[in-house]
Length: 327
Ligand code: UD1
Image (cartoon, rainbow, N blue to C red; front, top):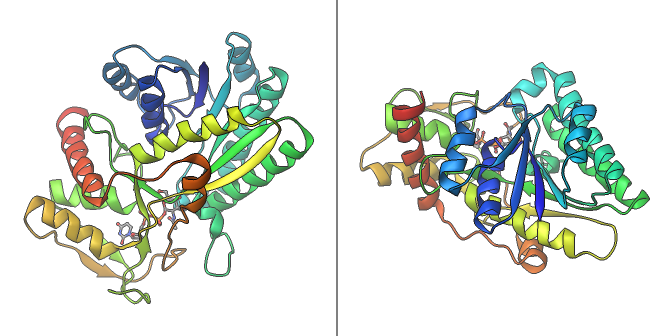
């Protein structure tokens, strides 16, 4: 089986490519490297023990993508290629709609033209929005719209699709040679704490007056390797489906942690306190998010197996590796 992985040089994409390679699946990556680095490809090949086929393509470029489809026989697609910064999406909404929806449109057109009907779509817990269910950013809306587009296309065609709604993916590959690149504008908590733990420097805690046990916001942090494995389960499910279908699944552990819980877990690992300042709430943040893992367990046979300590440990080791070898 050959699987096309768009955005396969990105954070979750690269970990998924490695999981696919580890079970002997042939993978072709389509990525424009706009948010990645050619070294990610070299590292993947090193870990996988063989080269991974790569096409430098902007997935919104339907002509280039169609040529890639014409030269391969893809059995399924895992679609990651998208922009994902909430803050940036407020500043550049058009770029977000253009890239995130444009890539999906061009991909669906190519899949139809080349008779490929199995798709796993990278979605987000952001589709759940705030406490009133309202999406809080252009980024979140591109993901919700993406799911709506898929549901409509499925009704009108033989497409079999699954959307995976990631909660808070974090951590890094067990080898510590691959992880989220910390210098690409990430504003997420885990990389920020890892950086503070390894390099010192400021760490800000946004919001201390939420109605949570310690006043800080709660999230469902899930190891990126668990998230990657869920894509294999989702691929198996769409490929086994006899008719067109669209399903969504939450990907999380079902356990929600406060910001201070996370900082404490890092402190326990390194054996010393991590300085942090207490700041006002960050705009657009919700008090608490937790995945409902029931459907994934029941229908995908998937559940998270790596705990917070594994997330913390791999984040730290990756940050050290990145500091010493990549920066
Ligand atoms: C964010 C995005 C979400 C996206 C996800 C991708 C927002 C509002 N949401 O999720 O749409 O899918 O990243 O990974 O940006 N925090 C601190 N200090 C920091 C960084 C974060 O206190 O330096 C807090 C945040 O206020 C939040 C929690 O930690 O309460 C988690 O933040 P983060 O890791 O950015 O994830 P989300 O905001 O849940």
